[in-house]
Length: 344
Image (tube, rainbow, N blue to C red; front, side, top):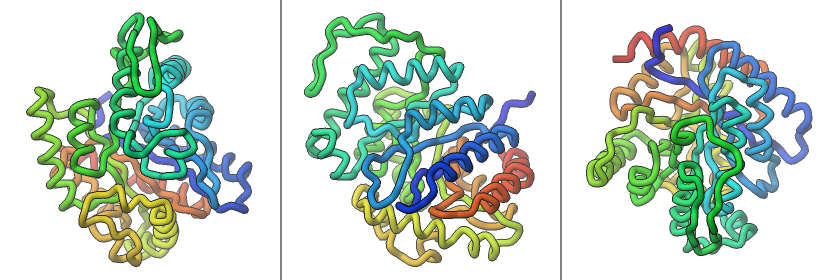
């Protein structure tokens, strides 16, 4: 079989209204996973937030453990683990077990996080976030690659510690580091297998930051990654107007939640206003349109930035299951072949 030039994944939207029927929504998500697997999508992503009040959200790790059985041919992306909040031995053990259970299909996405309620609940001072992230990631990678580890961090101590379950991937699951700010992008270059490009920023910002990323890779003597993932809001319908009419309100509702959570404060200067109306918010940020438009935009991200794994958020808050599945089918049947054909 010919190797794919572009990989296509879906981030299953995890945020729901407070009074929603969560058992019904869970069953819909599992049905989506089965459809994605059947249609040949490459990956499923689950995000992670705690205390999402006033909204509902399912916890990342148990969710991925369930979905790995529903979608046995797909990679599973923890996108992202809020690494500063957690103990590195527990994370290393958990993901080693998940890598075993999934047959080596795990992706380890990680970042700092930005919400005060999460930092406070886990007893982490926000000013210590970067140091804690770097210590935890170093410890996890050592635990994944060394028989036993002795290391002391600010919030943990490893004394000849070793993980209990062998990893299936060599040397370990890919480490994708999410980053918005310039310093975070330099950190992603130093510490990660790749930079996991975020869904919120515009192409102009990405062009500038890609130069920063490449400069830091050169400085530390690392090659440009063979896999460069990006998450984007994506929806496809038969016509541009239909795609905007269907998806626009749901995507806008999700960005209203991001604004409530303070996501804008973690973004690069120039892209921080996410309270705009849909038309302004969508410009050079969302991939919403007919099959030709969507394919053309995906190819542009590859040509300009080198992106070759697109993680699509297609559901929004409250989008009916039928509309979600219609977009999944149209993307797989008409968009993906156009993209693969247009790749260099």
